[in-house]
Amino acid sequence: MMFWYGHGMSGWGWFTMSIGTVAFWALIITVVALLFRALAPTGNDGIDRTPPPDWRTPEQLLAERFASGEIDEDEYRRRLDVLRGSASHTTPTTPTTPT
Image 1 (cartoon, rainbow, N blue to C red):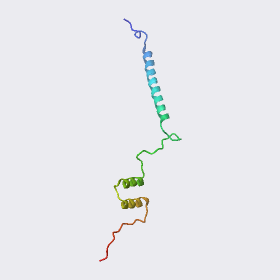
Image 2 (image 1 turned 180 degrees about the vertical axis):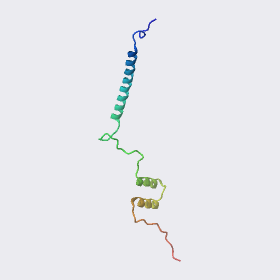
Image 3 (image 1 turned 180 degrees about the horizontal axis):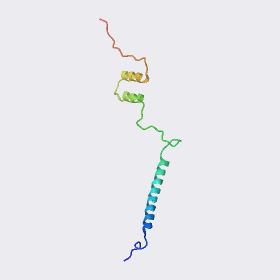
Image 4 (image 1 turned 30 degrees about the vertical axis):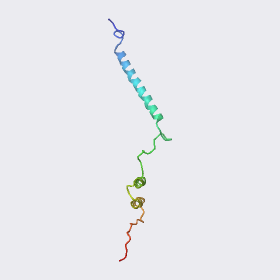
């Protein structure tokens, strides 16, 4: 019994079919990549310049710690002065009673 491909497919036929398959998948991958790039959020110049969601300044981190109650107001103010480079750093003093 002779199959439909048994007599007519030469070495060039297999080569052409292999190249066609590779070209087909390359086309599919290229289209998907171009669609992904076209639909991704970017700036005006095509480069995504948005900071990562967990990017915060040291002052923001300190404010969050103060807001959550990890540090008290005195410690918050001292650390904020240090972050801002303020030389007017005062240390809290405890009142003394005369004897």
